[in-house]
Length: 367
Image 1 (tube, rainbow, N blue to C red):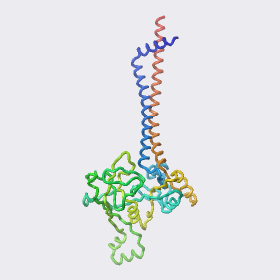
Image 2 (cartoon, rainbow, N blue to C red):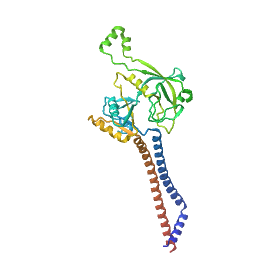
Image 3 (cartoon, one colour):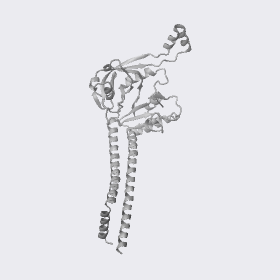
Image 4 (cartoon, one colour):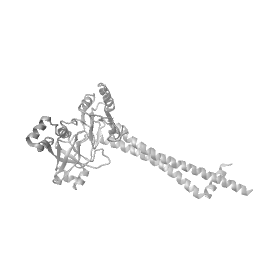
C-alpha cells in the first residue's frame, strides 16, 4: 500500500469518527500539558528555593541541633511526636519535648577549626508582654534572639544587614503584631514593649520550709515557692515585613542576642533548663568551607567517645530539604500526567481498532 493511500484512509477514518478523534486529541493534549506544567513548575520552584536560601541565609553559616525532628528527620515530624528515647537533657518548646544542646556541646563546636562564633538560640519565656500603644492590655508571645544569619525585610524602621545583630535594648516586632494592635508599622517605631520575666524559684530546703511555717504559716510557705519577677522594657526600632521571600519568623518578638541570653539565664537559673538550647547558628570563617567544617564536628565529638553527636545543616543542606519537597510534589503531578497519556494511548488504539473493523465491513459489503 502506498503512503498516499494510507494517508487518505486515515483522513477518511478521522472524518467519519469526529467525536472519537476530538476526545482522543484532548486526552493527549491534557497529558502533555500536565507533564509540561509539572516540569515547568518544578524548575520554577527549584529556582525560587535557590533564590530564597541564597538571598536570606548567610552561606557561611551552619545550623546545629540535637533533635533530628527539627530538620524533618527521625520520622516523628516537628517536635518528635511518637515514641522517643528518654533524654534527661531535653527541653520543652511549644508543647514539644526536644533534645537540647548544652554548654558542653557549644564549647566543642567553638573549639572546632574554622568556627568564628556560635550563637545559641535563646528562648525567652515571658509571663506576659505589654505594648506602650496598647495600654495595660497583656499579651503572650514567643521571644527569641534576632538571627543575624537570616535576612528580614522591613515594614517600618530599620533592620541590620545580613550578619549583623540588632542593638541591645531594642526589639523587632512582626508586621502581623501591628495588625493585632490595630496600628500601622510606623506607629510602633519608637514605642516600648515590656517583657515580664518570671524566675523559677529554687527548691527550698527542709529547714527553710519549717522556718517559713513557723514564722508566717501557710502564706509564708506559699511565698517561699513563688519565683521573683522582673520587667524588661525595650524600644521598637524595626517592624519585620510579612514576605514570601523571607525566611525570618513572623510570629515572634526578636531581641538582641545579649538581651536574650541575659533574660533566658535569669529565668532558668537554678533549674535543669539552665543553658540548654534547642538550636544554634555557627558562623564559619570566610576562608573555610562550611561543608568541611560540618564534617569536622563529627571528628571533634568522636573524641569524647560517648556517641553523643549534633546534627548540622549548611545553607546548601537546607536548600536540599526544600528541593526534596519540590521533587515529591512534582513526582505526583507527573504521575497524573503519565496516566493521562496512557489513557489517551488506549483511546488511539481503540479508535484505530474500530476504524479497521469499519473498513473490513465496508470491504465485505462491497463484495
